[in-house]
Amino acid sequence: MLSRRTLVLSGVTAAAAGAAAYGFWPRLGRYQEEVARQRQLLSADPTLEALIGLATLAANGHNTQPWRFRLNQAGVEILPDFSRRTAVVDPDDHHLYVSLGCASENLVIAAEAAGRAAALQIQGGPEPRIDIALRPGPARETSLYQAIPLRQSTRSVFDGRPVSSEDIELLRIAAEEEGVAVLFFSDESDLEAILEFVVEGNSAQMDDPAFIAELRDWLRFSPNHALESGDGLFSACSGNPVVPQWIGGAMFDAFFTKASENDKYRDQVRSSAGVAVFVGDRADPEHWIKVGRSFQRFALQATALGIRNAHLNMPIEVPAIRPQFADWLGMPDSRPDLIIRFGRAPALPMSLRRPVSEILV
Ligand SMILES: Cc1cc2nc3c(=O)[nH]c(=O)nc-3n(C[C@H](O)[C@H](O)[C@H](O)COP(=O)(O)O)c2cc1C
Image (cartoon, rainbow, N blue to C red):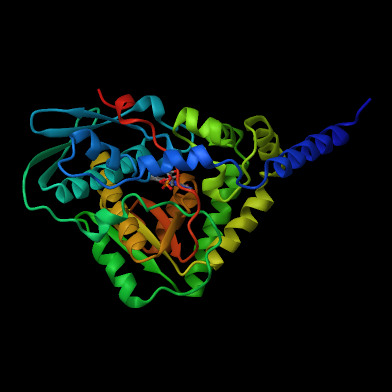
């Protein structure tokens, strides 16, 4: 009879062989074609659907794309799609509303490029939504607009080079939003202190089977699976090998460990130029949307400057650690919203989105 150890080893060997046979990022052809098709700037006289397409290229938690869009006489409404919530990592829909804020910012910037002035209003109530009224205005193709198709979350080790204080000032200006504070850290001692919170948060998440199961559900190991769903976290976008879905699952179960993940985050933080922390004045959907708008502009400005960014949200996702992190920030009464590292690195493959026709109501 095979021992458990032999079984595990043979599973891993099969997975490794599969990965080798498949190559590291092979057969991305059709995947890359679809990425290129989705990631285009507007053509002349664009439709509202084309603006919505650019809105969906925004950052969003686990790439669940938790939004719906409705056209009305004045413009566009962005609504939450609770069927795409991530109940374990985001039980109060914080990330969901931040994601809506990110998409709304892309839409406003794209509308401006198309010669439409956008007036954005956050509607409260039991299902908060974002109303964007559009009317003719001067066309402005800003560098943030140009960056929309190029922005990505880059989950690789960065090259360790610093970012100049001039560039940090541009990031700070881009992220300015009433009701949101953005704190920048680049001293080694601060980054090490943040890393400790990250390791503590990651360790808690890795010990939580529900967190792992939810994450695994959104992982896409093969280009075909990523293309079929048009959502989720595709391996190549995190710098991981591309393999058939079943092998990917086995590799994930074998290699995704607390120790390896913590080592990865140590390398990632220590190779970053700095960390930006976003903190809304209040912990409610209105402020989470504002945080999303602020973060999306930060990420677009970073992209325009050739600066990469990636999330390190574990200390704010684990409820037991979040207040300690707020204390460390010197903001004990606040709920910190996002922790973002930045620096320089080559691009990774871009993520996919679902077609606009699927998200229009
Ligand atoms: C509110 C929010 C929370 C996120 N949390 C994480 C995170 O904890 N770890 C991570 O690697 N990426 C995180 N992301 C990044 C998303 O996974 C990413 O935006 C999504 O997969 C789409 O990929 P893209 O940003 O490259 O377009 C987060 C994004 C948002 C908006």
